Image (cartoon, rainbow over all chains, first blue to last red; front, side):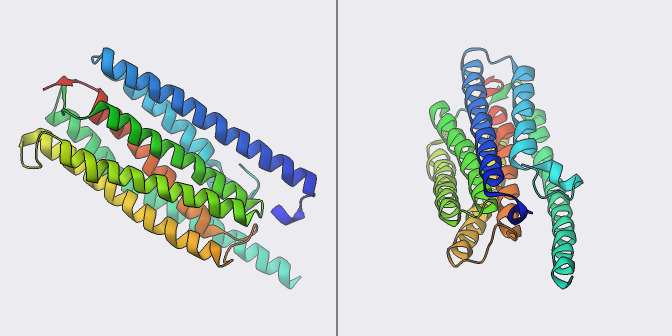
Length: 78
Length: 189
């Protein structure tokens, strides 16, 4: 549980979680821009666009929705 | 000893709540999967004539809102109530902008109506059903923000914050698939 951790450890885990969030946002931004460019200039690339969407969804489910918490009783999974 | 039992009981309740929420999300996603497949069956090779710029902007708003929702959860998990309230408020505002962008703008400027064939049916049902989820998410966010303001959550016990975060990210995941399906895939009819 969060209150059992030392203040430095808490600070580190918070920083790590925030960094992960920023990286996911940057990746989503770059991929969405890529999708937009593909969609505007090369419309037949449907399978690539669906693959990119699935890739983006995977990271959101893993790191924002924390699906791992469902399979663990550990409260500190970020 | 007694507090240990209470903590254990909260932990097991939390795990049950998580399972219940994910079961709801999986069952809800079947409806979205059905709509996604319907779009490609009814409009094979074509796409509705929509504003590309607006689609990109509202998609960006929703993705950024997911980042802030994640941030709100992290702040609450680490006991930073101020940071939590700020981040959840930004999420709420971005979600509202997305809703206005879809229902208030895109629906008004679309060159077809809901009854104008497959194109209209696909577009309005997909965006309408998703927008309804966004609306419920915004209401849920407001409730959690208000409860957080009144000090109802702590770093140890904040299930409602986790629940609204998972629900909000689910809305984001659905749009991640709906955006290319509606705006990018296929040529203009």
